[in-house]
Image (cartoon, rainbow, N blue to C red):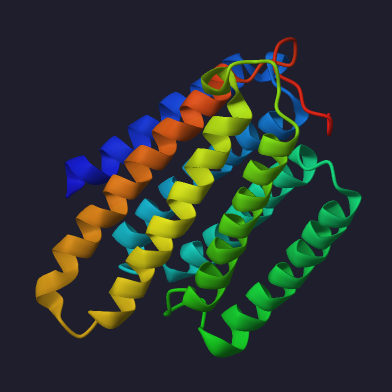
Length: 217
């Protein structure tokens, strides 16, 4: 387990380095994405510290759930061309942030309970954003080959992460009373993180403000 967990952090560190070294060449949404990788790495390190010191990282997971949604939603905000969609995303970010605080204080106490009430709806929203962005890409295709578009790789990463992690959290809730299945959930969780991190890294490598652009930028 030690190797699996820290392999994920090493992959994330590599992606952080990619984001930092290419930051000046990235479009605005991908600069936000690069910043999100730094935030995620810091949160992961804090999670390890809390696990080691307190044997409980629930409070860090509450922070991670809403931080992740805010960062990815802001990336979508700058990628969408529709002003209506942008306004909806703004409202959803505010609503999710308020609900996250309410959830942490009253529904799923931040010091003991995993924030599924935040994770599940925000993951679903990210998948919806991703589908809408794919629709926009189809209606307004770029001249840049698809596999050289950071937008494509980011969107692929989000729709993969949103759907598979939603399933994994759902399975965790179903099998929570059966400890023998814990290892399956654990491995599934980290396989998802490995693939997602790699896809984000490819997105940061392929985006270039001098090559790739969208009408939103």
